[in-house]
Image (cartoon, rainbow, N blue to C red; front, side, top):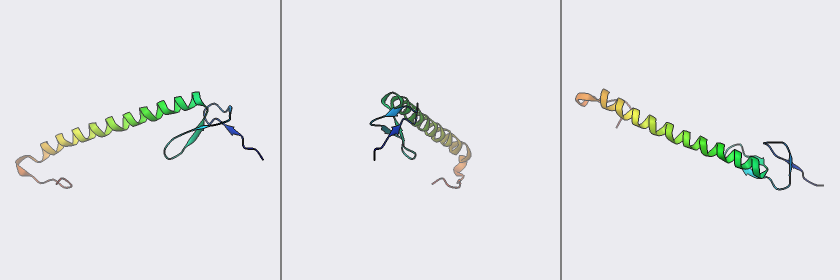
Length: 76
């Protein structure tokens, strides 16, 4: 019995698929794998910038609400 693969991007048959993804891994032909990896890279950059903005904005909130040694919940 033979195994046949189809690209999860374009649907074309692929002999040796490239797996992309962390949780839900997909199998792609080479050109679609490149596009899928661009998405993964962009998503990681968005995740990093979102986290950095949250951390910076949180520090501003802590500074504002902890004036005069006011102890905030969940802030050591």
